[in-house]
Structures are given as C-alpha cells and as structure tokens.
Amino acid sequence: MQVVRAIYDGRDIRAVEPIKVKRQTEVLVIFPDEAEKPGTMEARRLLRGSGKGEKLTEKLLKYRADETANESR
Image (cartoon, rainbow, N blue to C red; front, side, top):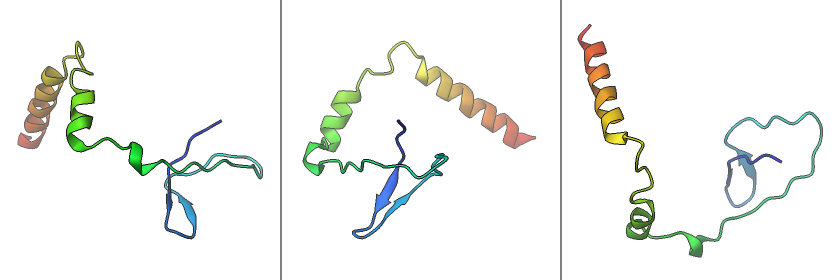
C-alpha cells in the first residue's frame, strides 16, 4: 500500500507527485474530515517538545552559518 498526495478540485482528483504502479489498480480515496483539523494554537501545543533531544536549534544555527559562508565565496 502506498499513500500519494493529491488535489481534489470538486470534479477531478490529480496526483501531486508521480504514482509508481505497474498496472491498473483499484484505489481507495479518503477525504480528511475538516472538523478534525486542530486550530493553530492547538497544533503548536501538540508539537511543543516533539523535537527534544534532536538539537534542532544547534543544527539550524550551523546550517545558517554554512549558508552565509557559501554566499561569501
């Protein structure tokens, strides 16, 4: 089973990325329920702390320093 992002415009479903299937295949289309989407503040609350221990700030600062050094060349 594979998951592919697609856009539904009210009439057609168009894949956003290539679909790698060798033959005609039956598919199951699932539309996410809009009511289940958390609000912005709730999403932030749920994500808070999810990257603990991954040193994301240090990685970001190193990446920015590297990019600045590359731009200077």
